[in-house]
Image 1 (tube, helix red, strand yellow):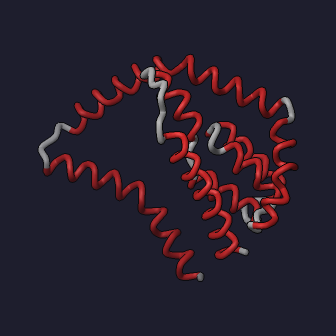
Image 2: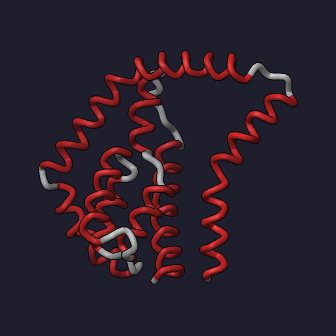
Length: 180
């Protein structure tokens, strides 16, 4: 198991620099003006950012009300019998609930959990893996679909929810397998 952990560590250290190098080399081979393409993409990104601000504010306010009103704690208590079945500590449940809703909210949950349990604890590792392997499904639906006026999401909602559930279950299983 130590070899696997060491391999994952090496891959994680080399992933971002390797990706950057690949982009530059691929662009050079295809004779793309990389800097100009980057600047053009940044301009488009800024314009999209301005368009999504109202949706972002609405989503963050709703999440703030959800947490401040005590709904997160209530939902965690209601679902704790289910989490015991999959060997997930109850302390990791707020991350599993928050990650599909908000990246910044999930970051706050992760920071609180790691502060209280430690980064090398099973719970700390589990919430960190959930943070890295999940997506802010409802945020994406509200902000990005809303900014381009998509009202019929069709299969996006079920696919996103299934992906979130699989990400949570795999996080719990892998962390328990490697560190449990």
